[in-house]
Image (cartoon, rainbow, N blue to C red; front, side, top):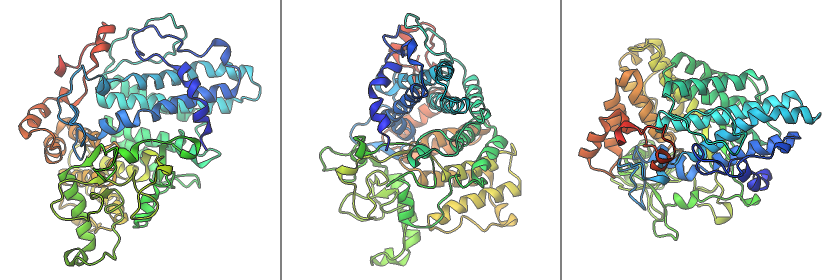
Length: 530
């Protein structure tokens, strides 16, 4: 499986090897003009984009998506990200170059694939269009990460055709970037060649399918506030009748929940980044999230006291008297103990825990066992069906502009309960029009956010969830869904400092790296960091 990733290591360096992507003359960054001869040539370059995306998980996708919120924090180093003291000089934190490498891979495929199609009679237009759809997806996803972290960023839609060109471009507004992301996803779907599935499971889950495009579009629409469209694209996944469609795995079982992470590529998965140790592809996620702080090397990430309380409360709700009496548990807690969450090795779950650990990346297929070093290859999930369910619930609560209709509240509650039932906890409330009217929009959005916290711990999502909800309806619930959330979970900085910094909308985004500003005089720093 995935041998092509290994084969492409040398090729990837040719595709976009320049480290200062936006504003210096690239050196040997382009595939030679005579390269575009066959379908396999295009395939190789395209897979290079996935390789680059995979390389962002540890350095960017996890810290960017987790540390500012504070449920998961870096226990080894109190980084400036989680203390909200980001600076333009933090090159490891603010380096966007890998995402622009992915973008250039996509731009190059979109610009040059047709040459191979003309040269290789076995390379059909349908196959070319399928490659186009994947390139559009990679470009859209990369810009979506950039816009959520930097807000306004340079927009590059042309491939580097000449290594002698110097690129100096200004930032483009968030609205324009998001419009381009949506245009790319629509273009991918309009090719008619986005696949429902590939020949192998790892490709179906690890490459851009029609389902991945729907998921990304739903996410983008939710971010933009296009709630009716978000519901539409969620329904394209949730109501799909195709045998190839991903499915919510509803069984309230720890083994079912953990199967999404080990072995991975489950029926619920929509898009996840792939590793396979059998092909010499390992990662250090089991080390970074290890629940043994005395191990060598020691773990990097831990779960904060506030998040521990959430998981302990769910665990106690499920076990009830068994927990209070201290007897061996006979009831399953599908997403708490040794599923999403784990106490320190050798300890059990208890009230008042001050530190916990993410189990998803360290757990084996046996409940109380950790992965051995022979299986240090967990995938990293970008989208799964539970995400789509909660996206739709959120959109239903916001689509009416003001207070949602009773019908939309009821639909949101049904979706919330679907997630809660898989977790083996009681329904949020009865699924009745009169009952749901007892809850306000804010209360129901809080419940969606609560479920996202419990469901996606360590998956690089929760900061974007808080930011998105806090900005919705012109910051209507910024205090309760963003500021108070960070204050509750982030113990890496003082409350007074967090209150101060979170008042600035500009502080919610990262600074542009200082070296980028030095090399590109058209870039303007995020106002908060000037």
